[in-house]
Amino acid sequence: MDLGLYVITASVPELGRDHVDIARAAVEGGADAVQMRVKRRPMGEALKMAIAINEVTSKAGIPLIINDHVGIAMASRAEGLHVGPDDIALTAARRMLGDSVIIGESTSKHDQAIKAEKLGADYVGVGPVFSSPTKPGKQELGVARITKVKAVVGIPVVAIGGINAGNVAECVEAGADSVAVISAVTMAEDMVKAVAELKEALMKARQSRKRKTGSRK
Image (cartoon, rainbow, N blue to C red; front, side, top):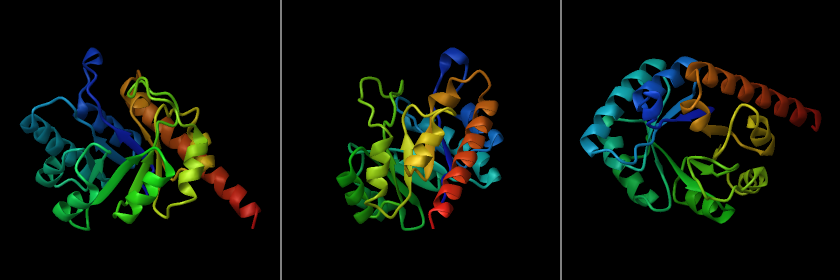
């Protein structure tokens, strides 16, 4: 499983953007996965958005991952679910969704990541790596935390928090398999261009890491 450039949606009313708009831009720009992150919407409205986004992502052949809401993931037939420490237990989500659905869990410490893998997570999110406007007040963990988590789990590690085209390489060099972004896309003047630039930065960083790894063999 390669989540690559993992774009997370948000509502940005001051720019006239909603979740579906951002998902469309993510797909057009070359994202490898989209997560719908809805926090304050009625469930019926959120489900309609999830179904609309799933039409976009399905045509592009990339997974849609729903943040928090296992019921919406089931009803929209999304390919995945992402949970945090205060959401439904990973084991319960797995029982409800089955083995074919991607389930990821947010972690900030290596012991949390180990536990998530043992409970059946398909990937772990590590962050916030850098300070993030999406998580104001939360202390940044730094790229060293990516390295620590990568060293103790065998599942993909997705870096998140304050990531942009300028620091993607740091995350990949530290061991991140994928990078998740929110503000770098949702607040960009041109979202499609921002996604394309992030994807290019990710691909270059992966190629650089591959060359360095190969040179050490």
